[in-house]
Image (cartoon, rainbow, N blue to C red; front, side, top):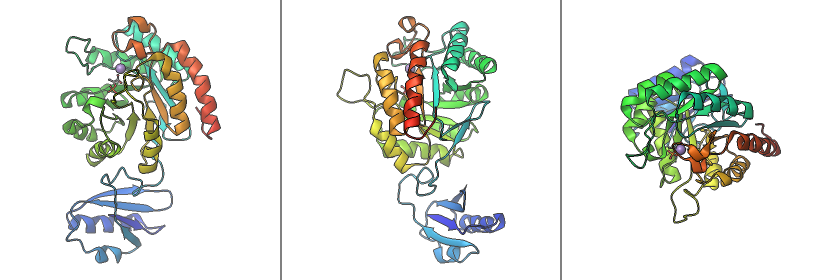
Length: 339
Ligand code: PEP
Ligand code: MN
């Protein structure tokens, strides 16, 4: 349930409600909106005297949260959450669409630093690149580990771009959080609950990718794990789901963008690279994503896709990224946004 405070309620009045909620053994989550504060209450409400809470000073009313995910729901917060990333504090979820681009994996220092310069020139706000790679085969390139993280941090130093990189295990959360600006949780780990709880304990924004076969409610419940763990800075990433179709690697679910924007206040970005699996489809999928209301894109971009150590087939070149950015800008403007 949500306790909605009257406009103008003071911090002391909100604290009083929080104390009451805690007395009933419920967990509280205070959300300060532009004109009023609400307190989301999570837990077993059978023994709660709602009347007592409703009578507390400056409480307007109590409403139930119907969605299974609570803190991620628009029922708790109608205004879109804006999550600032990187040294420039770029606001994901604001009016401006943010493009995150870079190779699938950090392959070596020179590759990553040169790519970072190029994607910055193209207008990206963050560099992506996996230092720990969740590969389908144990014989494929697994990433450079901490050395890769250091290279990413150097790229941030040199370009001012934010760093987005994946964490694949609980044991790496601390080291990845030390170097990265955004912790990516991959599709394969969307329901790795101990990992979700572990990133929930950090203070770094988390980019949660939709699982290969996850339904929207499961996706939002995974986000709820992170928020419930204490970290409300969650960015959702639609990256396609596994279907019977073979001409694409995954079937990019554009309607999920609009549906998520209906159901949650969390920002939503789209990965057109894993979402299609083919470089020649990336620009079209990106245009569609922005038109559908995505707050940003996560794009694989490689200096030499033919020789990439992973995901070359779906990686676009920096030139293709620059070209695509021109189109993205126009589409963003057409729907009252900016890129
Ligand atoms: C990636 O972003 O390189 C990646 C492994 O993506 P996903 O988890 O969506 O497969
Ligand atoms: Mn990849």
